Length: 176
Image (cartoon, rainbow, N blue to C red; front, side, top):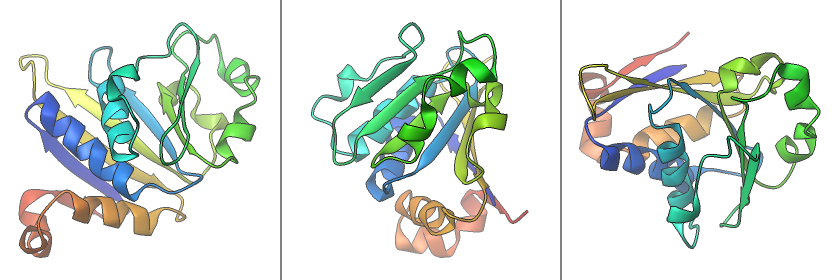
């Protein structure tokens, strides 16, 4: 299943991610991909808001420390694989303990380490348009079946009940 959202401003990206945080459950893994500056860390900040973090401004890119842990309704484990030389280096961080833990794991630059990620996850790709400072296409792809109900709940949380009934007009929802 793939859902494509559109965001016309950073606040819309935050709101979209916040909606995912509201429905997130223990064990959720989100892989984030996109160019430098596309909004991956902003997405994590919105997710953290939805998970009731005390200070969303504390969410920062873990590029130089590789992982940040945040306390919220569910613990948030925020990884960054950008600076790692290969997938083995990422696996050596003890990722299974986090992925099998009691929180929500988010991996920035997940496309660089995809082969060592669990099969059941939500991959989110944020594409910025070069000629636009604020427009983003945010594509969420369900990997495996474990999170199907959560993705549908997230999708529904992003719109009113009447909009959800007519969702195909607003978003492109594909069954793969």
